[in-house]
Image (tube, rainbow, N blue to C red):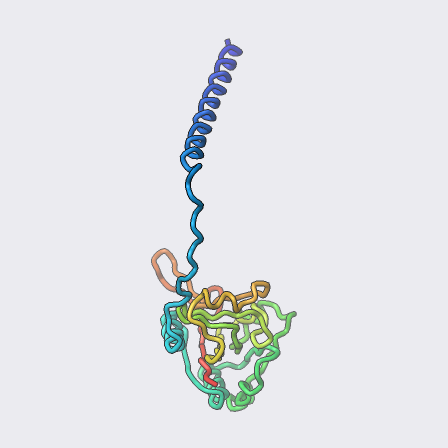
Length: 232
């Protein structure tokens, strides 16, 4: 009796499967017949805007969106930049500052005014996360800044250093050259970025929220992000 039940069950299953397969083929055949004489789909139009921000607004919009993400935004020119960097480090009480290998020397020319006890640390590939965690501040340039999203993009170029140095220290000062490093939108940014490089996209200081929406900053990146918009 057990054998008979198994055979009946198998036969019924096969029949159900056959019915299902046949229905599927009939439905697909009807669809193919219905669209057989349909015209080819037209080419998609690609004439849409790649940004909604006029050129004269990109710098102000970038500053607004950076501030909205709780970054601290400063504006200066090349002449005043060294003094501004020195002042930000002094206000932070920084005792150590990490510097990428090809950060412009002029940017650091006023560091002596912070105090003789300020120690400049070079970007060392052998540095561990624990060693970087005790660094007070890091200064870098950037690859691009995107106005509509308030985003900084770093690509590990020599003026930015390895990705790790901007994710572990608690205070990051990032200098953006407004003349050639600010774009309106992500579509404008993508053609200017090298996808083979390690890209880091930063929108404000690192932060997260728990289920009660209590914001905690400095979770997987710097707690304090200061952005200097540098006009040449």
